[in-house]
Image 1 (cartoon, rainbow, N blue to C red):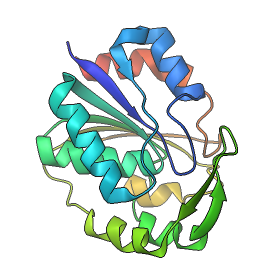
Image 2 (image 1 turned 90 degrees about the vertical axis):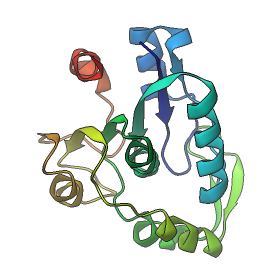
Image 3 (image 1 turned 60 degrees about the horizontal axis):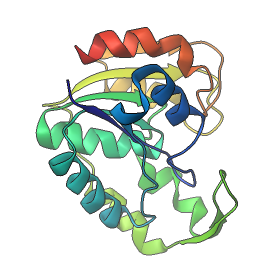
Image 4 (image 1 turned 180 degrees about the vertical axis):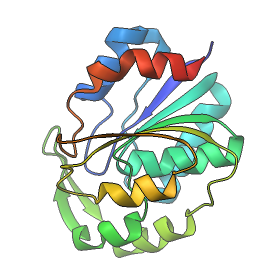
Length: 181
């Protein structure tokens, strides 16, 4: 079996609670969790390179990382686990154009208006990927029903309660493991 590539969300880092939980469960060497470039097209180029060179067989993406995971699951007909995925980041992130701080370490970065247009060019139709979509109804950032509707022909789990950070990923590890097989 290949490796898992964990794709973090907007303003986050590769080394966070979810990636640490995944590495603890699946083994440090079986999970890649890089810091992604801020520019969407740079992120796509970087992720594509990892998929091509690192024996990746499963994508796990949270929020914006879920949007990126969808792009690659469709491009390569891969399996992807999506945690509160963003379905239209060009809309939800438009309010964040300007200077921001990463949640993980307070590093300052600029989210440029050109990135919104880049995100819109990455929208893809759900046809070739295989998805496990894990949603929490109390996501304070994204409306979970949008992802529930978009991925409705796939395995979608809605947990009532929770939040955008999907802090209880540990409870889903065995489900993620079974989905990968």
